[in-house]
Image (cartoon, rainbow, N blue to C red; front, side, top):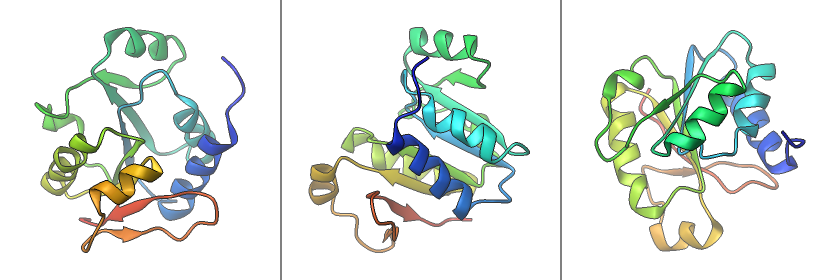
Length: 146
């Protein structure tokens, strides 16, 4: 595994600062980029960390790293995976998955934090009740349900 890119380390630090006492945090669409989770594991050792993705090959590789990962499709989610989450987040998700992710977060009473591609942030138009997260180098939007 290569060294964690700065971008993912900054995301993990932001999440750890916003949710220092979180019991459970879920990443949706982890793919083959476990760096945020690996950093969170160090920063929040008492927090249950779970990552989900639809790609079985990615999930198998991440299990080999000792990560808590599950196959799940946010369009047909297994809600029990998200229960008791303080935060659900996704890094550069496809725009069409933001609403389904938000619905899952609302259903389980978790906040949702999205790190979109910059062009997607304009196309999706993160309007109220979404809030832009104040960070000097990260583009992120949060919707609080918890």
